[in-house]
Image (cartoon, helix red, strand yellow):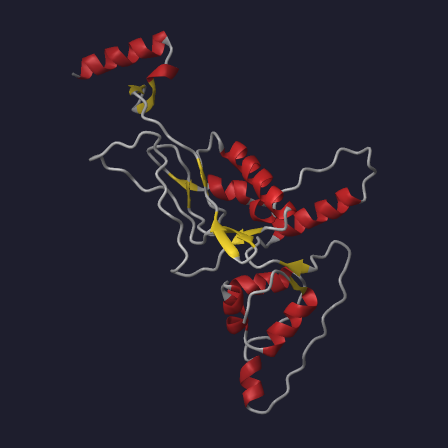
Length: 258
């Protein structure tokens, strides 16, 4: 099955009733549970457990009709795009802004891959370089600190929308072992023979499709070597950010321990 650029409610309905969910999901490069969420968001009824077994035994289970779309319903899905309550909210906002008078300030729109991404990035493991390492792996490919997260998301949004404006679709790639992000070294001045922890990476590549060509996209924040000093109860801060009073206290504490 060739993955389409987008699938409508009607097309998805026909697909999930034509063959098992697992096989349909594989064609889109997603899990069956994820595709079930897509069906829920698009209000597409899907076969219940045991449906295909009943067909094999000659039974003919009832097939519920596809309900007519309601106001603010999502009517299509792009494989690789985010799905869930956040996407439904984004679609509602787009429709609402489209009906607003031209004198009203337009609502800022997020690319589908960035809708609801911020709180997921903030659910992160502790790191020694302040770069976020989200627990969530199915995210857009951005390596950034909490301090610069909003700026990075805004930059990604501008880039993705600009590419989409040129008819170059930006989405997450298929989940397989053959598509991995290239190694990223965020150090402005790499130091040889020194341990370096690899930065976080998502389980899917963020790609832009230009014709038949697919290119990986990674936005990452560069880091630099900074002299640090311990302050208070073991917290390290850049020396350049210390006031004279804090610096003096730290030196006295270090001397006392020595």
